[in-house]
Image (cartoon, rainbow, N blue to C red; front, top):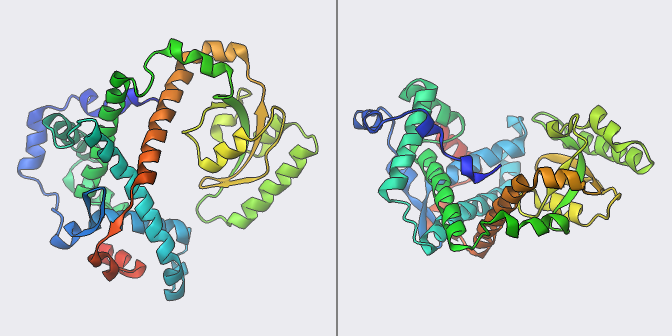
Length: 339
């Protein structure tokens, strides 16, 4: 998935500046309250408002509960709070890493070009939902408000601006011919996957046992492609004997670490990622495939380098909680949004 095609929806929709003005001049979209705008932590000099933290915390709570609201007893909430807060910090560091890098490379997130693109994307979303009321309702279903949606949209727009700035400066190699040799070495490897997903309402332990059974069958010599077709839940792998050609920087860390540790023909252990449980087979690369898809793979490599740059920046950032954050606990955060 290349960044070249990101954020073209607003332009394709033919939105004009007058349409954007009509959505903002007499808007019925609620403004953030003083409490929602209150700074609860800082990251690299950026002040992070409560509403951004709340959006993430509520969604991570849903992940923990796995569709069972009875999970949130006082005891479970107390046990999970530190872990969920840390997840929120990590995610926010990743978002603000983009803004920090933009600042380093002279990209102003408040410039008219970026602001107008964000306005156009928001206007496009309002138009897609039908009207402002439907837009606000859709945001609330994801624990968002307009301000939070605009923030994450701004980060997306800034990422595109940053990506092309890095290409221009040569921080990311812009020429495919200079990347072609990487396709031949172990920068890229080929893997196939049997995935058992942890879907909402499913017991992860049951899925783990299913994956362990499939691993035993693959290790015993059953045809890997047949197991993929019969039991795998990765839609990309269906009727696809090519598998994946991957480099580091795109997949889950656990996935990449396991894949790159394999020799050709070797099967991984069962790997747990946020998607579920995976079993990997490393395969010999097909020269004909590499030749046919080499430009697309170069785009994948550039995207991976961009992701790694943001990841490294995020890892260097330290979130500094402010006193108001300690006024919130998991039940109160959810209850606050539902008011």
